[in-house]
Image (cartoon, rainbow, N blue to C red; front, side, top):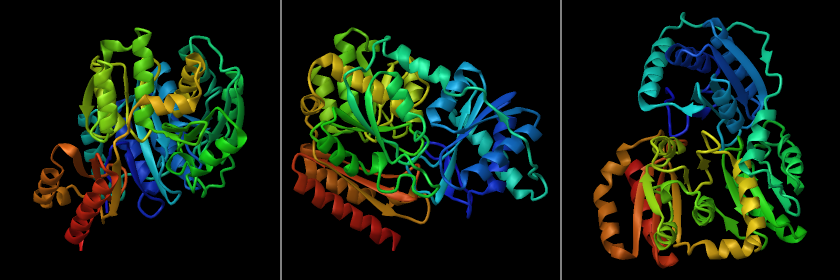
Length: 441
């Protein structure tokens, strides 16, 4: 089995498939195609990370470029350094996936995501290197350490706040035992907030385990019991955020995007009075934007697709329901810590509590999402059941919508059904999930 690029880099079981040889070949291919003289390398807290990072640095240095190690660090910090230092960037992380997976995210010089043609060229060269067992050998290297990887990034968040502080806010941050574990507390203390951190003791295997943005239930209980103003749940590499209001209600990426868009629009700071959303964005967000006379631009799932439209100048704000929000005036990728700081600032300026704001933001239409495991990231299954999808859409008529797609980050088929009634959404989603399962069996 050969891994390929998904919606956000390459991911797979480590070291069974995503191993030192694979990442050595991938780093060699990327350094050849992107022609960067200098590379910034970072990773999350998975136990497979150090060996994979070392293999990547070895490959880059053997190819004649400089590899600079930043150690355990959030993905958006690597992207930021790649931008301001005009370097390539590599993050060894599988984001929200379990510890048994790992992955590689690549940034071109300037901190930007790869273009389709660049990914295709890298994949082609990668497969050539993998096929030639004598082509690549790993060498031990003494890594060059970055002297201060986080200082400039922290200053960029201070600048994004307009030099306002977060004084008076009580936050609880769930670090998902990931790459923000050592940086979230000092960052928010520097911004002036009172902060409690949880799940910030990584052991190499507890990343995302019952915590973080994919499991915010623990955070919700602590926010309520502690009387905190807001909870911030990050994922393993801290490029996404799911927030928790003071009453424990979730503020997902759609609600955050709604709050930010309306706030920026009121301050006449929303570029083109537009936001970029994805096909997964809740119908309630679309309705709220329409009522606010804000244009929505829809793209396929994946922050790379959002960035493409942002970089085209169509908007400066975009995001996904999963919590990837991109503020293009401040960053080149999703940044959960930046989003958390800006959301806290928005709440402080509003004079309301987070529960009130979350409740007022938008009416979320019931949405059911089911994941059906498959052998690989197959797109053929959706074509095979297209007739059943159309029949479901016909039954829903104008009461909802359907989306069935292969995940770009995991070997699952995602079945999403929205409907005005939750029971209807649930029954139709389960029906389609059974069809998908039958087509696999």
